Length: 127
Length: 256
Image (cartoon, rainbow over all chains, first blue to last red; front, top):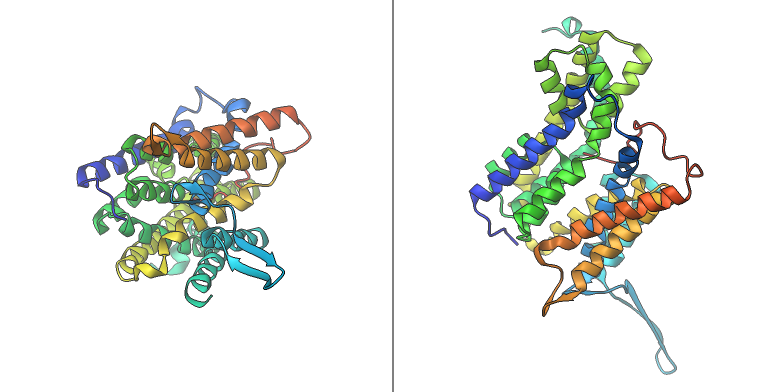
């Protein structure tokens, strides 16, 4: 799904993000002597940037399907005539849960990608 | 130049960075693929990468551009993800204090989570002089830069040649998942993740003025802010029991 933005907008975003990131990186390197440390309360808040932002990026892409939340990775139904049947619910959520397990065990981004993509392909092309 | 003429700090920096550099290859590949899928030209993908040199935020920004999010939201997201680098800048600044402004500029540009972690641990262990500190930092950070850009270019090339049915765009949330899971190690970080993810989902499914989801992809920013506040609140209410408020210097699971 390609962007509708033109080259000027894209280069503009790249330049602004690049400049701002450089300013963040260089901030204390240049200011040292005037500001010695980050206030502890700011440091504490910054510690929660990665979990909060990464979760806000990940969770919707796993559970939001066509504008509503699909929280069922595996649909299990039981009936007297057919017994218990299991079907794939939300394939992205199921693949994401497998990948999260891999991330938990290995703490490795490559293993996480591999587990998630292989699960998705298995659900799409095999099941 | 024969290897023996390379300053020891440079050799040490490259050697220390090598295993870390291997670890960022898949991340760079995914960012390259995602850049192409978002509609960036190869020059734009590489140009952005050289200007920002910031893995997670690059990936988030190209993903948002591909979804036609508001430009301000894309920029804000990219900058917020990189705010954590303030901690590393403050922590490493004393070691860079004697550098001239050109050395400071280059070192700042190359400051990533991984370069920071490698350098500070070597500085503490070996107590090198100013020049060796600079050489080590540029060697380690420069190695990471080269590997990152090369893997991104490989991803740009691959992205143009992989069929859409493979669903390669799914690798984007997987990368963030691979960064998220290790970043959740304490109760406050768990609270930040649960609230951040939950509020972002709510923002995507809520019906506002007849259309679904908050406008401009704001759900991401609202979720992130709510998550940060939740983490601060839980950590304040359980002060001293979590042991996660030590000095900034252990970038667990945060990649860049």
